[in-house]
Image 1 (cartoon, rainbow over the protein chains, first blue to last red):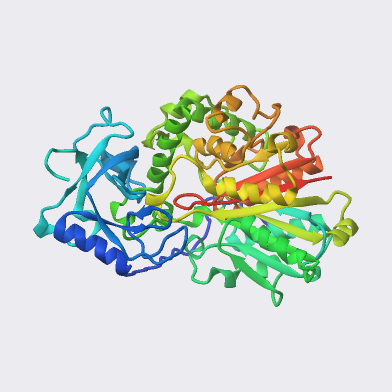
Image 2: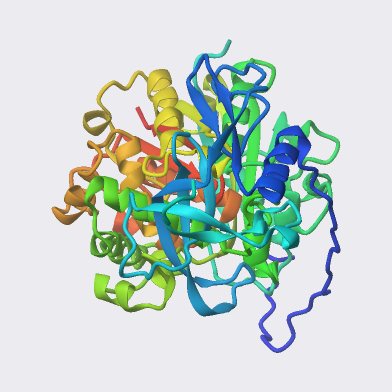
Length: 162
Length: 383
């Protein structure tokens, strides 16, 4: 047993190598469906709004976290936001190093209590600051599929667009 | 309802970066055997058993079915809590409180070295629709939080690096610890960037190990041991899983879990009433952020307490004397268990060269790691 008999030969640790193939579909649900359809068709973001708590949800939810009422009021909140926080990321999800570091940020969408976590494009690590205004940059309409990667990232605010 | 609940036995394997010599079940068996010997009872005399485990981390579906035999719980009341050890211990505490269970054993372990793609396994915890498609590591999510915490509290990366220096240094005095080292804050800041402001040495490395604790009601505890360690308060709390809706500067989950535990323990002035604490430092900045959440100081003051030695082993409020996760190792759901282990050894006066003199009340706090916002707090005493 493990307490009295120790394995002392480091060349012979024994194991069985297994792997678990797991595949899922993750359904968007009502709120996600509306959110991604607005990105795909109109290039804009939708929020749900709880008038009782004065909280707006991006990404939208069909219920309020706080008062637990059903939310069915969707608001077009545009594509502008502020950098709530950011990081310069050097590593991929599998632990490998990135070819080039990317700036990842939490962008608080203007006028909402929510936002999106996405890349910053067109602003260097030395220029970036908390509170900086940014706006979403989308793939061309024909190439959008209705997913989070329809957004290329967030870049400097340009005139004219909302 | 029974009055008080005590820890009457504890056992551990200690913690190592890899354990190729044993299976995870043998690891648990060793900790269980030691805990039952420490308590002076056999598992046949224990009324209920709880394990803390998660399927993905174990590599099993329904991993809880593989728990009973290595803790002596075959054909006994047993269940698994998919959370931190402190959440499992809270369940055990409540079971004893009902009066239906005189004794309950609680187990947690980490066999991190069995996970071949550990980074992706942790990544699978992120939202699959909004976050995971970016293929970013969970460390990047913590780095986002660190940036905001530093901004809101005027704390510096160097001050966070001093947490690493303190805790890895403390671990040099802990025979259970896997990652003791004498390093300077400069070594941390010069280690390779993972997701700035996080460097490699700001991040606790994973370790293997198991801990088993035996809880008992007051009468049973007094019959079993001369030094029962009382569970005075316990609390837990979870914030929204939606990263986009969170407050990125403050650890609200820890503040509310602590408030629950303080209420139960009758603690109104934590700094004055708590002698030492083992708190979550899975990332360097987390120790400082959690100190503030636990009301040890006001937001922005934690780094000052660190720099003035208040949280050192000979300070007024020693924090992570064990070495914390940075020095002992990141133990997944056993994180809370190693903190309870340190509390019990200190409160029994069995902590060897790292013993803090005259301690009576200790606090343990855990966080379930990125991307969770779940925290738990337990307050133990020897009074």
